[in-house]
Length: 322
Image (cartoon, rainbow, N blue to C red; front, side, top):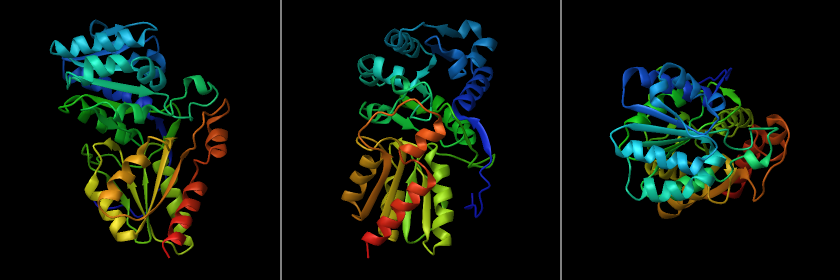
């Protein structure tokens, strides 16, 4: 599909809602699809699946570690098991079981979906904000890790994940996010999407930061800075070719993520760049801290996760390479 030249960025549904709708659609097509949830089905939108397929929905209560074990058992018995909760509970409370019961035996039919990721969960506060989930998921050998930008990407990647030959973690969010993609956009796990061409700097973004990267690009273009924008929807395995090409062709990269910069996408991109085409890099993300309770807008503003912050990082990167 050709690169788009303009983006209206109208607000769409939250990626957690898109996940729930995609899951229900999969359930209609494939009787092997089963779902486990930890007493949060209305929030994770797995309730849409539960309503249509109560015999294939397992309410595990507030016991995330046990839920992962149940999902692993179902995946071992011929089912395609989607296991869902808030990212902070699923990854933190269920990590040992993800490690031993899923990653070690390489259960390809196990799909973990974390909702309410990042700090854009808002007023619920830091105890329910997941700022380390991508790092944890990437540390599990054999796992594929996805972070879609909008509803179109989420629906496509949930469907792709269902039949992907590896265990998968999908990161989704609570807040409604701008629609980046047109219906019919194709996605391939492990392949970044180049949204905008550019030659001075490349912005590599994931999740809700993709929309902020597009807004930043518009600001930079008005200043005479040509910024390439890539959606890194697959955090693991990375699209090494696209990253290396962006580094070589622009000489400056900015990585933007709603995640701790320590252990997140930026670290993984830097590993690729160091081994292929070393260049100037800047990182936009959460700086070694937990957030607090506020509106999503206030939090993204305070912790530097807006288009203005991405644009400033791009200016620094371009200035440093001169």
